Every structure is written in C-alpha cells, then in structure tokens.
Image 1: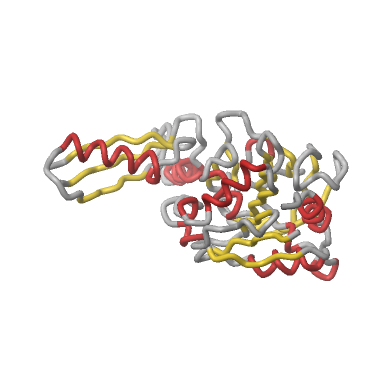
Image 2: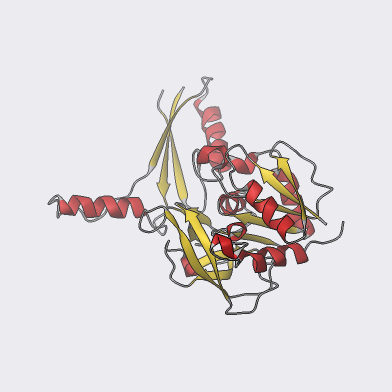
Length: 214
Length: 80
C-alpha cells in the first residue's frame, strides 16, 4: 500500500504528510505535479501550501496541473483521495468535491488549534472514528470558508466553534461515495503530543486503512 | 482586440471583504452606503479581428479558468 503525496510549485506541507504517514507505518512518496502516472499508488494526498502561488483563486491553476487527470481517475476508481487545506481548495476547483472556499468570514488568517467533531464516519478520513468524537488539530488558512450553494456536499467533520464561517460549520467534506475528502485543518501537524496534539493520527489512520489493493 | 471580462460574485455568496469595507465606510461617516461588493475585472489583449470568434474564445476561457461557476458570473465586453 503506497500513497502519493503530490508536490505543486508552492506546496509546503508535503514532508509533514509523508512523515505523518510513515509514523503510522504507511508508505508515501512525493510526486511532482507534472507526473501523469499514479498507477503504482493506492491513494493520493494533495497537501497544503500555496500551489501556483494561489494566483487567480486558490487551486484554480493547480487543477490544470498534469497530475490532476490521474488524481481524477483514482477518484473515479474509488481510491482514497484526500486534500488537506490548499489540497481541499484544489479538489473543489477540480470539481471532485462540491462547493468552493472563500475568504474567512472575519477576513483574518486563522492559525490555531481548533476542535473538530466527527459527524459522519463513512469516509476515508473518518472511518476509524466514532460519531461525535472531537479531535484537536491546527487550522492554518485564510480561504477556509467553505460555501456550497448546491447543498450536495457531505459534511463529515464540523468545527465546534466555526471560526471561519463555513457553511454547516464544515471542516471536512466528502463526495457521495466517501472516497474523496477535503479537510481544511491539518491532521498531519497533530501526530504527536509533543506537537500539541496527536488527534490527526485517527484521521490519517483512517485514510491508510481505506487504501485499496492495486 | 481589447476584451474586458467582469467577474461578479453571485448574490448568494457572501463577500467578507465587501462587508468589511462597508463597515469602514460607515465608520468614516458614509451612512448612506447600503452595501458593498468587491468584484474582479480582467483586461485581455487577444490577437484576431473577428469579435464573435474572440467572444467564443473568451467564453471558453471564463468557463475553464477565469471564473469559478460556484462563486461567480462573468460578462464579456469586446472593447475594440
């Protein structure tokens, strides 16, 4: 079982994601965004950062990176696809998740630990958690305010205090099948109590347990 | 040809920036401002001299990249 961690120009959380996966006994390789073949991987993570400098809109240019066709193909095959922070924004721009992310309600960059509650356990992110379970993980974003005029997004985790004004207090959203998930706060930065919280392990552990054999 | 593209945020999508500017205007004493919306304008210079063809091309550009249909409507004006 191996996870691809995509590196766009401007990504900055890719090494944290790889370290978090390896810490849980998984395997992960970095893949440059110009790669077009992900056939050796069982799942893919789009990490946080500022892909293509967030030019135009967050994720707007990244969705046309050559690797995204392979990411969409994996999503269609039912493989695990996770976008974290900027990765969530890219999945929305690519149409792999409903809705879009706009500036935080109070126009402040939010950088602090937040409490996030599991609302739906049938997704690749939440399948190892209990409904109502609260995890503490860091939020680190300006455009973290998820809007979904279509009303079709499935909120699998919600903020306890909704700091950015997201629709339905959504912190993590899944597609209908539950194999594509975007999460705004960073589970990979909360993998050890020395870092302030190890709440991210339950989520990334869920991701690892949902990898399908090739 | 010069082309102007106006992106307008859909009315149902919140505009935190516009809301904040509106509040600042009120603080400055401009009490009559009912609302503020902040939008985007693109100025393109596109090779060619067939306005209809250029309009079709720019429409495709808007649909693929310039606009996010969840958030924004677009309007194209061929300037000359």
